[in-house]
Length: 215
Image (cartoon, rainbow, N blue to C red; front, side, top):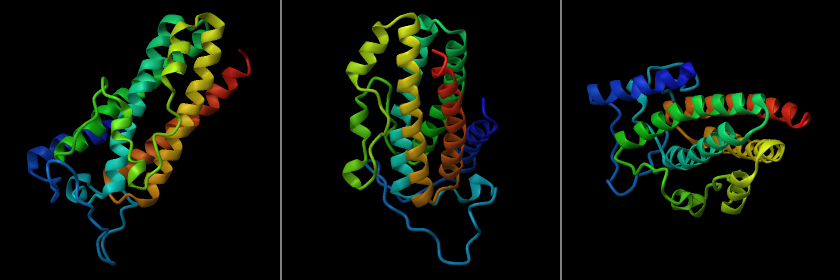
């Protein structure tokens, strides 16, 4: 489990215990909170998330709500790889993806729950949490139902090819979403999460491109 994710989960639990991480939001949706006045501590460092994580805006919420369904689909794809992939390297990669993204889902869900914001479930339509109608980019890189069915029906080398192509697009979409959120979001925890997603998934894209060249 990435160290950042461990820190995020522990910080989220500590925030609940200490009564921190509060925000003036209604149960049915968040209010946008603007960045603090000039002179406030620079959030690009490594501050204690429990002290300043009450500062968040719609960009932060959009990232968390859209990335959870995005990660859920990656877990579904990885589960298929464990059953149908021919390449051991592909199966190992799928296990690593699951190992990284499952705890990230937990951290994102905790962040939303603490702010009384709806947490996407795995059995829900991802489009329900698409914030593109609010001026944000959509959940980029998502597989369509038809593509997921094709992947589910594939076996062996055919599966490896479809999995790698699909997951490369999936990861690229996640990186784009993380970079967008990093530009406009203000929450410390979300900022660290976007950096984590971008770094890990960019590295995995490189690995998958190498594997794809050998399929």
